[in-house]
Amino acid sequence: MHIEKNTSLKPYNTFGIDVRADYLVNIGGLGELRFVLADEQLRHLDRLILGGGSNILFTRPVEGLVLLNRMNGIEILSDQGEEVLVKAGAGEVWHDLVMWCMERELG
Image 1 (cartoon, rainbow, N blue to C red):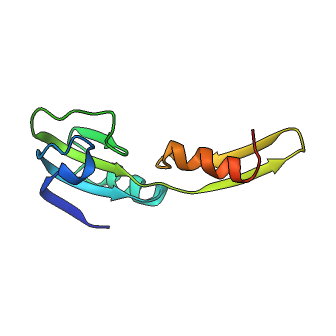
Image 2 (image 1 turned 180 degrees about the horizontal axis):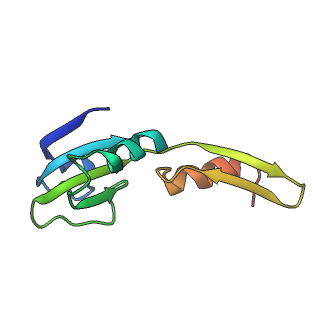
């Protein structure tokens, strides 16, 4: 896991606003998230969790740590015919999840 310093957030927001974050880290799983939250040098920083960047408008640099939520994965936990339980990672794109379910005829 690589923690970037003084990084542009332009590629991470749909408005393409070029602001900088003090620190930025890609979180791909629970282990990485636990590591960052427990790290002595990072745990005192303010945090911003960022997904696809479509529901945020940056107006100033982000002081603290930006956690890029890249915890992906979709799986069926149980299938009881009329009832299907699907588990999706917090970083999944909503449209992709919907399309995944439609491809499997899950309503």
